[in-house]
Structure formats: C-alpha cells, structure tokens
Picture 1 (cartoon, rainbow, N blue to C red):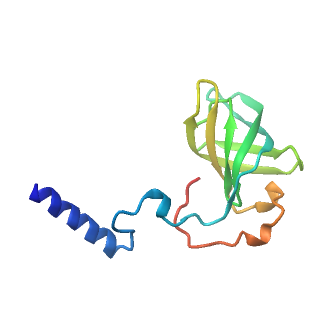
Picture 2: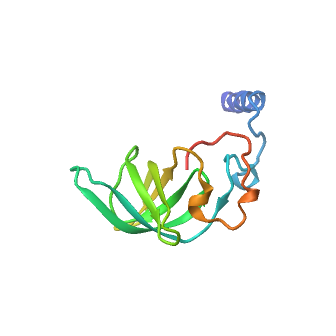
Length: 143
C-alpha cells in the first residue's frame, strides 16, 4: 500500500512542478484551456467532401458548437481524421475549407465531427458579438 501512496505523491509533485492542477480538483473545477471562446449555435450547413472511394459527396449537416477555429458538426456521411471538407453556412452562404480533427459516432446513423479551420475565421459563423472572442492562453489545439 505504501508504494501506491508514494506513487501518488510523486505524480502530484510532478504535476505541480509543471503547473498542472493538484489536489482533488474535478473536471468542473478546471479552467477553460481553449484559445478561442465557443458558442453553442445551431447553424445549418452544406458539407462537401470526398468519400473513401474518392467520389464526391455533399449533405446537409448541423454545427452545434462553434468557435473562430472550427466547430463540432453533426452529420450522416462517414468521414475520417485528416480529411478536408468544404463547409457552406446556409444562413450566410459563406464558404470555409476545414480539416477533420475528430470523429465520434453519436448513434448508428449520426457522427459528431470536430473540424478545424486553417486560420481563425469567426466571420464564417456570423456571431453577433465577435468582440469578446479574443485569443487566450494557447493550450488546447484540438476541437
């Protein structure tokens, strides 16, 4: 039992030395580590891409969480990490190239897809108060 306790003390000391939170802080107590503010918005999109066979596809999708750097999108078509997509905001007709950084199946027919823009572009989402989207400490790169 003392080896386990000693390992926990060592791990906590290491985390403390690297600036990581220590003690019994839960996930809810941790500070936000993303570079840009996020908004929960329902934005209808048209998504263009290429399937695994190389054939082009397009489909209607929904952005459910957005930032200047990308979004979390719910869509039917299977995509894979690293794949390039073209998004069209159906409210504004603005276009944006992006890269898939994460894919998670939410159910048998729907995927949650995290996408990242090559450069921050908050204008794509038509967020009403873009002035409060200033960059913060750059820690978490993924969506």
